[in-house]
Structures are given as C-alpha cells and as structure tokens.
Image 1 (cartoon, rainbow, N blue to C red):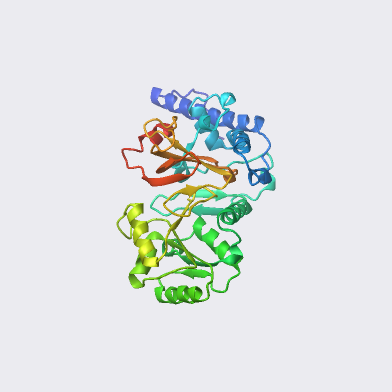
Image 2 (image 1 turned 90 degrees about the vertical axis):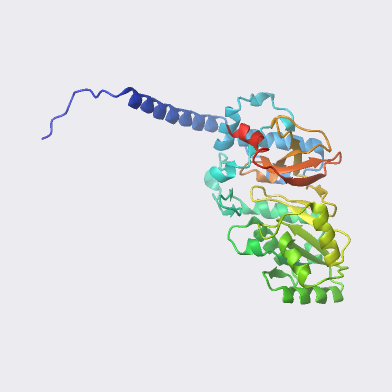
Length: 371
C-alpha cells in the first residue's frame, strides 16, 4: 500500500502567481453568474417591440431591453462592467453602451432569461462571409421572420403583389446567410410562380424580366451589387414595373466605386429612375431600406445613432459623418445595441446614409471599447 506523503510542496513565485490568477478568474466568473441570476429580470414582450409607434415608446422599450440584456447576457454584462458605467443612471439612448460588432466574431453573444429551459437554444445560426466569420445565434427564428416580414410590408406593401427575383450568387454559394433565409421566405410568401433565385444563369433571368415586364407585373429584382453590374453588361433594359434593389457590395469581385457613380450606372443599365437598397447584416435581425439616393429609413423598432470616430462614447449631430451605432430591438435574444464598422450620417427625420467603412486607422474608437 502506498503511504501518504505529508510533506508540503513548495511552489515557485511564478507558479504561486499563476495559481492566484487562475483562482481569481474562477471567482470572478462565479460572482458574475451569481449576479446575473440574482438580478434576472423579466423579458419584454415581443408584441411590445413590434407595436412601437412613437419615439417615446421606442425609448421606453429600448431602456427595458437594455436592463434585461445587462442582467441576462453574460458577455454584454461583462462589457458594461468593464466600462465602469453606473447602469442606474442610464436614462437616455445615448447613455447605453454599444457592443462592438467584433464581439460576434470572438464570443457567443446570447441573452438568456429565467425561462431559458423553456426556450429552444440556437434554433438557427447565421454566419457572415469573410475569413473570420461573425456568428449570430438566433434562439427564436420566428422573431427574425416577424421582423423582416413586417419591415418589408411597411416599406413596400403586401409581398403577394410582387414577383421576387433574387440575384445573390455570393450568398447562395455559402451556408448560414441570414439574407438568403429572408429572401427565400419572401419568395415563398409572394406565391408567384416566377419568383426564385438566380446564380449565374443570366439568359434565363433576362427572359424572365422581359416576360414580367410584358405582363405589367410588379417585380422586385434584389441583387448583390457586382452581379447587377454583370447583368447589365449582358443586356440593357427599360424596366417600368420593376424595383431594382442592390445589397451586399462588390464582395471582392469588382473595384469599389462611390454610390452616386454606381447608381448612375445601374439606373442607365436598367432604365429606371431610382435604385433601391437594403441595409442589413448578420448581427442584426432587422433591415433598413432606401428607395433612392442612398437615403435609408428604419422600421419603428430600429434606430441609428452616429458616434464620434475619435470618442466612441460621444455622438454627433445631424449631417456629421461618424460611426454607425444600431439599436435593433428585434435582437432581444442576443444584443440590441451594436457599434458597427460602417461610417454614415443621420438627418433630422431619422433617415441616414451609409458612406463606407472604417479603415485600420479609424477603427481606434472601437478598439478603445474592446480594451
């Protein structure tokens, strides 16, 4: 039988420090979990989000969701605590901390309520393109469906009035695209036999557009920007019953060009007066739409703020260019307050423009928040 060794083990100073750091980290994580459980608050009703009709109601629901997510989202809670913000004093939208969008690439950003055992965890996982992918874990896909259906109807009316033609090759060629999920659902809801996806079969798409035009059928052609440019290089159009909507940019397929030049080329090629646009991303469940001139409007449960690029906790007045912060209340199960890497400016009526993206030097504001 092996005898017990009662001799004490002497640790080097380095090992003692590492043991202390490890123990301290475990204690901090345990304290955070206990705080989240003790401070758990009830989840705002989904119906409340989609019935917002005034700015005062938006503010009230946004502050309620902030409180809910601060107390039930471990990543967001730790982020706010690290900023040393007194959450009891937050009474305005501009005081709410916005989580840098990069966290969706490195962390699991989810909000769990006290009823989480009744919820279906990770019912759907959406991923972005690129080398390091963002991941948005959507525990209730019906909220996403409700958001994009209600948003589309608000801006364009009944989906059944349209034939939906989707030219989205970059998205179809990969898995996990939230845009493909949305468009696939809209195609089904349109109930139109001509609705569908197109990859690189331009000849078929050209014939379909001409056929629908000849029937005076209201049509929505939704395409990734570079593919729309490819299409008009194959065929010029004179569309009178078709909305042309661009989304997604060049995806590395073509050289980026400014919006004004891009829309001029597309208007000429399709024979339309305006080019519409959709603004959405993997990390949010709502979309803003532009009906021309690159001016976007949000649905009632979504709002844009413009932060100072040199100070991520300060906000700019109308018509000043800065970083786009998004409040998307449909993100109730992840994080509704996101600091993006997009540059833009807002106007007095809450419409906004997207002017580009941060380069490596401009990103310092977001880095301050991460640090």
